[in-house]
Length: 257
Image 1: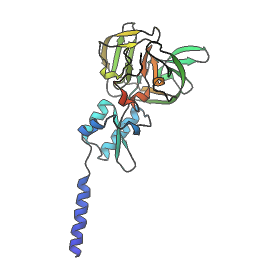
Image 2: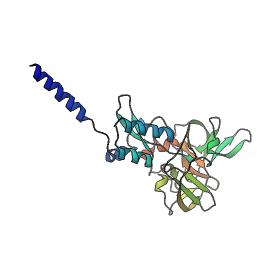
Image 3: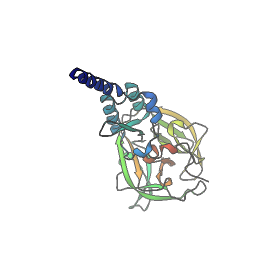
Image 4: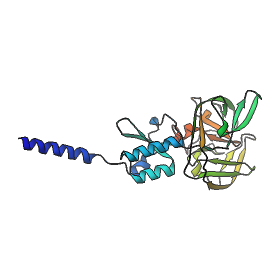
């Protein structure tokens, strides 16, 4: 009887040890951006890397999953029992990107480099009733600021008005069609919307560029989807929410006619 009990214990241990398997890259990609309800805490790119490092060290994800996560900007959400609950995005603006904010001192909208923005600034973002024919805006407090290094190359957009915008590959970009897409999915046949003229501005070139500076992002204090669309380098783009909670809506119409 004692020998039988020892055998059963050994079998139980064997089953327990073999039941666990690291998440492979196919499953990691499949889950990326799907369970967005768990992407509730926007984190910096540096923090994303910490989560990826932990997941790999604990054997929760494979090396290929880790490499894909680093390259594509997705980190695992891991609970206290070391269960992977979701795969979420991270991504930001290049440090010197001009972001439109409301200046109390000047009593007008001014542009400030992303690296110089703090919680005291108010971001210019679309109002809840904004449409493509009437891009009305408001001034919104900053709920969250993130900062961290970025390993993958940034997407660089050269526009017909001479403006250049640099963002991470998963950053939400508002097209003149009213559709919000990730930077990596934008092509030269598409156009953005000028915040000054309220008309389409053509993209004349798209390139990639690595940076050794931190990248930055922000989240407006608003419950409305439209008010998470801010102004960077004179065009409308998504804030941090479009890379986390609203990731599932990328590719859909964000602002209607």
